[in-house]
Structure formats: C-alpha cells, structure tokens
Length: 543
Image (tube, rainbow, N blue to C red; front, side, top):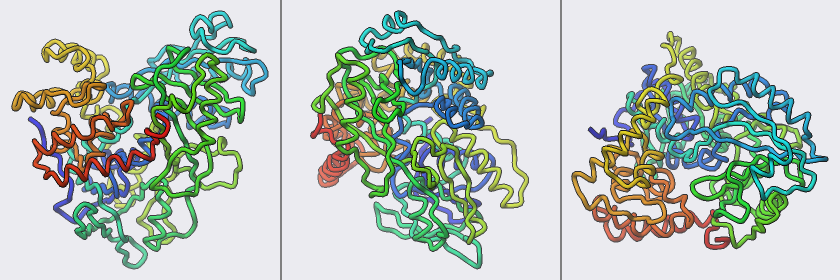
C-alpha cells in the first residue's frame, strides 16, 4: 500500500520545531520522531533544495582532513560512511578513487603513503577494500590519458558516492513522517514566538498559498544552513555571526577524450587544493572550488574564474581532454555553512559541526557546519541534547541500524537480493529496472503499482534517463513535491540530465495536467518557473 505523505501540519503543539529541511534538519527530524518526540520540520523551500543538493556527492572519510589534524572528524566520517553503506545501499555505493602522485607537488609520495596508512588504521571496521599503491607504469595502465610529466605513481583507495544526495535528504524526511513527524515545505518562518528568555514557538507563511500559521514548541532547532544568521537576525535572536560560508562550484561535462574510468582526486597546480574528476550520472562531475562568499544565498552560481580554474586544472591533468566552455553541460554552486573564522585559508576551516545554544534564548539551538557524511551522528547528538533540554530520559537512538525507506531490507546484501528479484518479477527492460532501483530502491514496486492502475503511466517522458510518467504522479502524491522543480530536480532526478531537465519539463508538466488536474495556466507557469530557476546552472550559456 502507498502511504500518503502530506505537508501542512494539522496540529500546532510540538516538542521540537526544526527549521531547515536539508540533510541535517531532515536527519534530526527522523531521529527525533523515531524516539517518540512530536516533531515539525519546516523549510522555506523544498526538502533538500539548498546546500545539500550542491555538494560533490561523496560520502567520504575526509582524507584531506588528516592534513589539519582532525583525527576525530576522520574517524567519525569513516564510521558514518560504513553506516550509510548499510542503511541506504540503493543511494550510497562504494567508489574507487585514484590519487596521482606528482614530483614537486605539495603532497608527495611519503605524505600520500602516510595518509593512506592512517586512513586504513582509522577505518579498522570498514568493509571496503584497503588502499593500494601503484607504480608509474601501473598508474598509466589504469588511466592511460593521465599526464605522465612528473608522475611518480598513484594510490587507489575506496570511499563512497551518493549519486543523488537529494534523495538521501528526502528519504530521511519520509522516514520522519512515517514515525509521526509533520513536514511543511515552502513554509517560511517569519518570527520566533518569545516569552521571557525562551522560545515558545514559530510563526510561518505557507508560500504557495500565503496562509499564516503558527506552531508551539518547547525546543527550536535552527538547521537553516547558510541562512542560520539571517533567521536569527529576523527573529531578533542574533548576538554574533555564526556562519562564514565558502562557495563550492562544479561543472558537469559529457564523457570526453581521455576521461578516466574511475574517480580522480588530484592536487590543483594553481592553489594546491585537491579537486575531483568523477564519473557521475553517465557524465563527469568536476569540482570543487572553495571561495569566501557573502553574496545572495538564494541565488548562488559559478563565476567565470571558477570555470576557467576547473577546466584548466582538468586539462593539465588529462592533456588530451582539451575541454572548453562549450563542452560544459551545466554547472552548480552552493555555500558551505562553515563556522565563522578569521583564518584566511579556506581549506583549513574545520568541517566539524557545532551545536550552538543561543545566548539570549535558552531553548534555541543552531547547527553550524556538518556534512552529508556525518549528518546521522550530528542528528543523534542533537536529539540527545533535545531530550536533555526537555528533562526527559531519551530512548536509544536506532538510526544507525534502521534502513531508510528505499532500503527496507535490513542489509546491503539483502538489498542486492531484492534488486535481483525485482528485475526478474517486474519484467521491465534492464535499463528501466536499474533506473528505478538506483533512485527509489525498495519503493520501486510502488511506482509499478501506479502503472498497473493506469497503463498510460508507463510512458517514457524523458528518453535520456528513461523516466516514466508514473514517477511524476508518485512525486506529487507520495513524495511531498509541490512544484515542477521539486519533481524534476529532487524526486525523479530528470533535472540532472544533460539538458538540466529542460528537454523534459513540458512533458512532465503535461503529465501533471492530465493526471493531477493542473490547469493549463498552472502548467504553463510551472514550466516557465522551472526554466527561470535552472538558468543559474547556466545550461544554455555553456552547454
């Protein structure tokens, strides 16, 4: 049976209100709801519509954090990577990464070797293979197009990739709902309700209708990412700035001459910052940059210098690539919610998270920092703190063992069995089965149940990805989608195809008009809004 997932809350009394439905907020909501708290999760946009969507899409142990002595963060990251490989095997998969070692690079052979051995030691409980060191000849056999000038060899190690980070956020929100949480998207918090030195609740506007709502809460968690300070200032609860964000940008290109068969982790010549060249979603993801950012948080996009940096460094590492701006399919950028620091070196700013109690309001907490890899442990720490604030004994946290909704098979091994059986029983083409499994996991049969009710929903509306009409209906009816952007960019993932979903927007809107009752006016408006939104990815400029 398909369980209806709904948005606007019908009650207004909660133990905790979480503001911000990115990976941290959704993870906190899931853990809190599983432990029996009454939870309301709010976001001024969509679930996973902010920073969580714009990372390098890795679940990694933080190899480079070893350089800055953050041993605890590396150990936490490696432990959490193992956890996510088990609770979300449909979304998080092992990724071999090759690290070329060049003469005169800042990170020489001994540094790389020491880092690899330390990495292995800290991941003593891992299931992924150990690292290997390669000679120059072995390295070039592995990646023939790699620049041989000054090449000494390479190391190969394993991390993990979350191809569609948006789905990881969504499934945390869906799990929270399954355990009683209320989730309201496009719900902009206008003010905190304050009595004395405590927050008593929030007032928010439902953006799509203009309705004003309020909710009472004993604890409020500000998990708004880069927008944390903006929220505190608007609420009159700001004492000092918390966030000193940096912008990270990526470019997406089609497979190119000399493209590596596996991910590369390379030191840039210009600033010695490591960057990635990664096979992703049938294309290649190249990034990231790390630049101080004080601009508009609601409209972040790559600049020309970043484009030239990423193209130039890629062409240096793989000379035969000869990538140009015209070969870029699209770009994306986001702002990391890092703690404010006077350190001038962006690379050395800690990636650890901090839970900051507001000095003016004793039951208001802000989440500073954090990353995809460690969201679950951050959530556990936060919910422990909520119970302490409520003066209640906390039930045991179970999120490290309980699979996410799309992996409801208990273990990665069991998921592999489920996937084999689904392919056999669904009688779908191999490519379509693979697509459904890598996006929806064990929820894939729910898509097929819609097709069984209406065979027209089997129609493919995007030839490139093979997405079918049932996915559009499923997104709106059962996965909290409110707009066409939600559907394409964060549910069906069609918005991450080579045209940024522009080739499929009208078809998807047409499906919503036919099956969900959209008026022709809304259909046209949704397509126009989607086209306007994705301009920030520069698909027409550089594609």
